[in-house]
Image 1 (cartoon, rainbow, N blue to C red):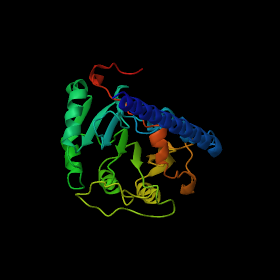
Image 2: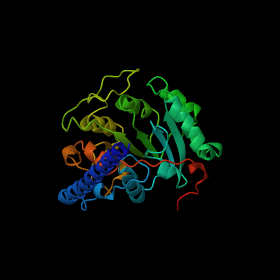
Image 3: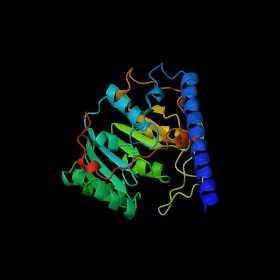
Image 4: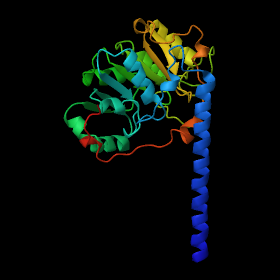
Length: 285
């Protein structure tokens, strides 16, 4: 028994040692990328990245976007929030924003109802439990009385994101959009996943849409690409009239594109926060 416990402790120490090395290497790589990219100039957004409740550093980038171009409406709509503990709008909710979360998993929705009960009760947060499709998205939003001019729209569906976004923009005009892009296809490659109503992500690369395809869709709707996060997962757009001299709007999309760096997610931004009593939190100031 003693030998077994000794070996188990040895393996645990080894595991934590390896994790610590990976985390330190990830941090070194992250800061090296920021330094080498010279992102501190030309109104770039990468260096403002911070993780509070987002999967990566989206919280800090969104904070900076809102500082430079405050949205008229502090409302949000986020599609694909899992259990609510790690997404792009929780930080905003805790700062007094209000809005809607849409999630298709019954298990995740049950946890949201329990964890965020006070926000749901005081109507600061609405939860729509629905598997999102092109056919039901507009009806669901209309039933939830979602205002046409949303402050922020965030989409993370791991699949039909492009098609759902296109449908939403036929009616709604969010001021800021953050959406995942498929970094396996760098600009100027145009690639869009074929719409599949029953699609569920299986870990393969053929999902979502390339950055070039998203930019071309959103240009038609009067939106400009203003940045991508360093992990190569999310792209940030704003209404074109809001850009002015506050953001770097590049003619060359490749200059704003970031390649896929999942290793930063697992080494630098991997810690997910979990809260059992977040419904009792006071708003952040």
